[in-house]
Length: 194
Image 1 (tube, rainbow, N blue to C red):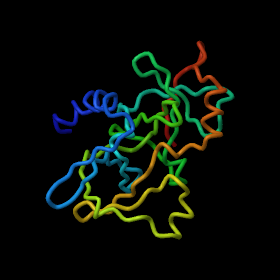
Image 2 (image 1 turned 45 degrees about the horizontal axis):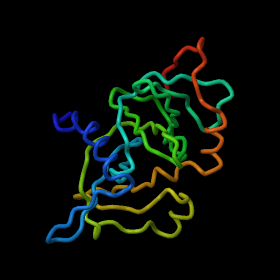
Image 3 (image 1 turned 90 degrees about the vertical axis):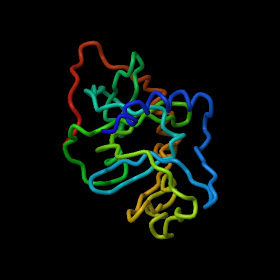
Image 4 (image 1 turned 180 degrees about the horizontal axis):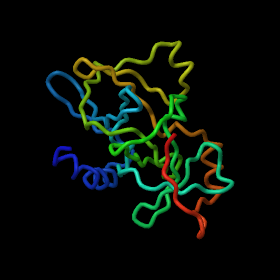
C-alpha cells in the first residue's frame, strides 16, 4: 500500500467537513475530471465520488445485532461511534464469499445516517475525465436501480460508478433509525463473510 494512501482517510475527513456534499472536480486543459475512490467487489471494479466517502477503515469485527433490519450485517465501533454495516455484494446481488486482509469498510452518509459499506478492497484514488463517464445502458440502469450512476473508462479498465448515498431506500434508513442500533452488552463479535 503506498504511503500516500495510508494518510488519505484523515485528509478526506477534513476535506469533507470543509466541502460537504461536493464532488472533487479538477479543471484541466483537457477538460474536467472527477476524483473517485476505486474499490473491488469480487473481480469487478467500482467507483464512488470521493466526496461521498467520510472515512475508509480496515475490516474489523462486525457485531451481529438481534432483530436488526434484514439488510444489515451488524455494527462496528469506529472511534467510539457505532456504525451499521451492510455487505455491498449482497446489496448488489453479487456472489458473496470470505473477505481477506484487503477488505475495507467505506463509511458514507445516507439520509443523515452514517453507514459502513463492506468491500473486498480499495485499490486507488483516481481522477476520471468527465468525458470518459457515460450513463449506463438503459437495460442495465433499469436492473440496477437508482444507485448506478454510470460507467467510466480509466486507462483500459471499465469502472462501474455507484451513488452510495442511494444504496438504501428512505424506508430502510428510517428502519435503521427506529432500530437505534447498538450492540448488546453480552454479544460476541463475529467476523463477516461466507
